Image (cartoon, rainbow, N blue to C red; front, side, top):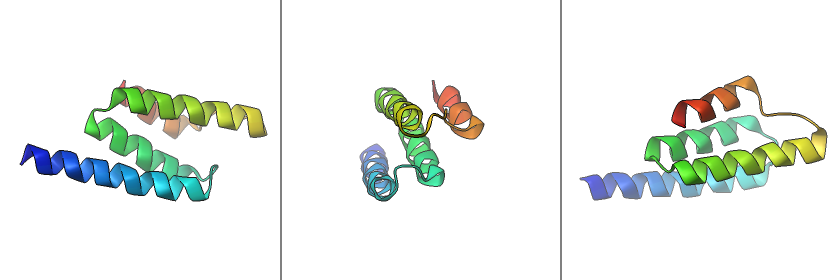
Length: 77
């Protein structure tokens, strides 16, 4: 059963990454991916993705992640 759950999280993360790749700035898909990584317990990927997203926002449009994205990140840390 645990193996099936791991597979489902991996599959969900793969799908979410594909969705994210279609629009770098669309926040709902970022929220979905971060939520999946956090629920999966993959803190390293969660951290790496959050940092990449933060850098992208800062470099491209001069903004920080929204409070809801930041709060989700903090909840899983």
